[in-house]
Amino acid sequence: MPTISLCMIVKDEEMNIARCLDSAASLVDEIIIVDTGSKDQTVEIASKYTSKVYSYLWNDDFSDARNYSFSKASMDYCMWMDADDILENTEKEKFLQLKETLSPDVDIVMMKYHTAFDEVGKPSFSYFRERWIRNCSKYRWVGAVHEVIPPSGSIVYSDIAVSHKKIKVQDPDRNLNIYRKVLAEGKHLEARQQYYYGRELYYHKQYEEAVFVLQEFLLSEEGWIENKIEACLVCANCYNHLDKEQSALNALLRSMSYDMPRAEICCEIGKYFLDHGNYSIAAYWYETALGRPQNEYSGGFVLPDCYDYIPLLQLCVCFDKLGNRKLAKEYNEKAGACKPYSKAYLYNKQYFDSFQIT
Image (cartoon, rainbow, N blue to C red; front, top):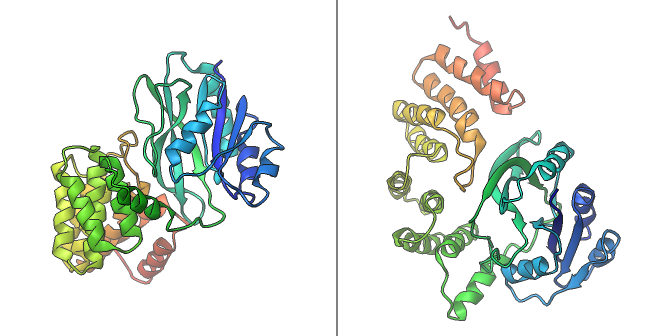
């Protein structure tokens, strides 16, 4: 059975770290904590779980800090978690089973990362991340922010999920400031980092600059296809904020030059036509979204609701506007089958129940 070192970098996480370690400590064989300058009780709390707590002088480089944590590991695999991550009880048995059955030639185990949740706690935003990485010099983190270990070797995808459950809000300017510093030092952002830099600009409502950075990324021959597709989506959001709706639509359509349409893109195109009163065209795109396969293994961000609940609910709206109340009600019931607790579904149900529909 392989052994696992849990490697974490932390700072001022007294509110989170015990919850994280409680969820994972019994599953791993070693815990490595690298503290980057805590002024609260983080180190004291971590020391209750492991004697391997190290201080690290923060230098605005997440990869450097994570690589330092990996350098302290002595087990077969390194596993990373952030302090506000947890392994739910439903995942623990699967975690132990994977340890018992993992082939010795596996280099990287990818696990789901749930980072947003709906009103009843169901994941609404997720993607795969490298989670167990063979402990050797071949695998190292790259990127000052939004760091990653480039995938290579024998890779296994597991349905085990780590859940990101924030308790406190981190410094919202941290990542953007790091990118600004890197650029001020005359350093070049490789394609993936340029994509995330554009996203950070978007989050900070610097829409014109975000579009400029992302357009440069899209023109580059470098970069992952999924990042290209998502860059088109972010550009569309920027254009919408800049009241350039046609440019937003063009950006969404551009995404299909990279690969088959994603349901997330189809839903956005459908929304464009729905907002403009073109209900038949909107219905086409929502129906297309329903027919798209959900590819969790592409490396891209996945919004599960775009593959069923959202297009079903919006098709209800479209067909009600088109005067086909019977079909609209049917779509609403299908949306309700996905989320029976949805306020939108329940509101629509009450609306349809007020009519005599045959």
